[in-house]
Length: 101
Length: 244
Image (tube, rainbow over all chains, first blue to last red; front, side, top):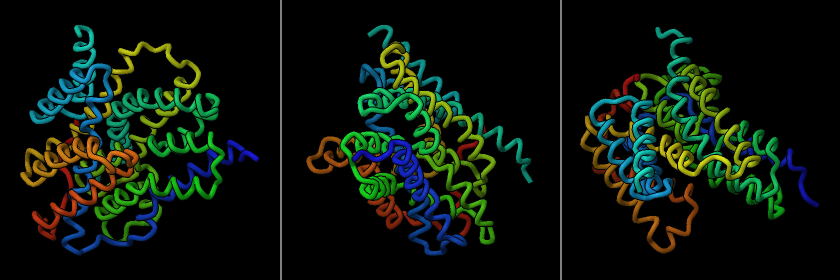
């Protein structure tokens, strides 16, 4: 028999939420271990970098447009543009590129 | 002391580009969800309360194959295991004595993207900021899913293509400023790009789901950098990305 779809959806959401709050339930104070601190320092940058490339090139219709957006976004962020500006520049780059390709 | 309302609004502003990216990604998620037998309302509810891209995609696919709830729970744990790491990173930045409620509220907002902007923000993570971002982004995620299910291919492919880059542009805006300031972060980003590219091509590793590849690479690369370039123990403030 097929599980009720709404029960299924709720269980999926709850299991996902448990992963989100697992650390919050365990940790009471910052961990002093130097390796662990260093590890956690690098985690976000590594995760986001891994998720960005090569996915950005695969997300667009033309890989070239995605590659161009990657370069434009890196340059804009390097020269101090904020989140929203960098994101919009990326979208515009793809739009313009795919208009001509 | 920062005003809660201002911090919330800042989070909300930062959540908008995330939401635009979500909309595009959710749209394609919705197209898949329809094939797996989900109605627009069911897709909307799933996305509103789950807000996890890879995990939801897997969940939808599992439903179509009559998976039991126990299997669903186990697989959801595995595919979303990176959220545990992110939770640790966020809690690490909260001083001793931070109420459990604050920790739980911040943790509840974790998505890859909201985690990214929250960790990049100086100071201890606050629920005002994370909820600002969540409230801006998640409704667009849910709406995108519903639109994908009900409208399929009505939105021009060109627009979806352009929108899907918003998400990555945001990631880049989070990782590049700290990379410019800290050579070790720059190295970690470069190595991550290279390894991530290789992982898509290599046998065995490329067979893993995207979520599992991400966590595997994250653990290995971050551990190697933690050994080679350890941080000074005091004042290990995370990122440096400044407000707008």
